[in-house]
Length: 322
Image 1 (cartoon, rainbow, N blue to C red):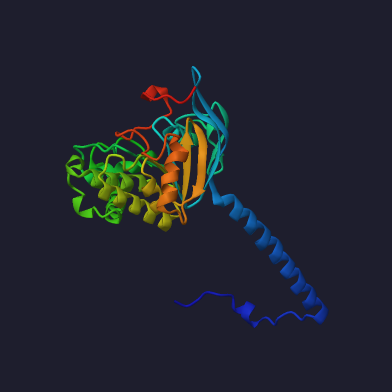
Image 2: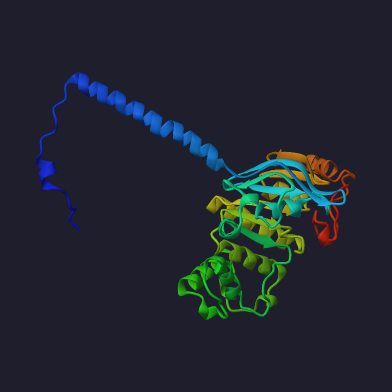
C-alpha cells in the first residue's frame, strides 16, 4: 500500500528557530508533558484501582437482625478476595449489595464508580451487565444444551426472546463456543447440561458469566457442592481468568485453605461485621488454623454448616445478629 500524504508538506522548509526560541519550546513541551502525563496518570491509576467500595454499610432486616453491621471495605481491580465466615455471617448479603439485589439501610456501596443504591431501571441494568455472577448450585437449565446455556449469558444485551439455540446470532454462538473452549468443555457443547458432573456444570456457569464481558465476578459459594479435586479445579480456573482479564473476583467460601491458595486477600465476617482483613501472601498452616478462630469465634474446628449455605437474610432461613 502506498502511504497517502501531502506532497507540499514534504517540500515545505522547516521554520527557522533561534536558540532562545528552541529552548523556550523545549521547556514548554516538558512542562506540558509533566502536566498532561504525570498528574492525570496518577489520578487515573488511583481511580481505576478500586473497583468496589463499601463505606459504613449496614443492612437492617428488622427485628434487631443486622445482615451487615457498619462494614467498610475496598476491592481492587483485578484481584481475588475470599469472604470467610459461618453461615449467617453476612457473606451472601454483602455480595447481593454489590449488584443491587439488596440496598443498604445506611452507608454507601460504590461499584465501578456508581452509587448502586441510587440506580434504577436502565442504569441499574447497565451496571449489572458489568457484573457476572456464579452460584453454588450452578443455575443451569438442565434439559438445554451446554452451548445454549452459555449463550444465555448474553440475554441482557439482546432484544427479544430466544426460544432455541438457533435464535441466537451466529456471532454469539461462536463466542459461546470460544468460552466453552476456554473452560475446557468445547467437546460437550451439544450435551445436555444436566448430564455433566458438578465440576463441569460450574465450568459451564463460569463460561456463561464470561459471555457478559464482566469487569466484576461475584461467586457465591461456587465450590461448596463439589468434591475437593473439582473445587480446586474451579478455583484455579477463576484465578487464571482473573489474571488474564483483570477481572475483579469476590467469592464467598467456607474452605480456608482454598482461600489461602487462590485468593490474594481474605475478609472474615462474623455477625455482619468485618473481623479479619489480611493478605494471603506467606500464610502458613498454623496461621490458617488461627483464621478459623478469628472468623468463627468458636475455635479451629471448622467453618460453616455441612451444606455450605450462607445468608445474612432471614428470608433464606438464616439470621444475622441481634
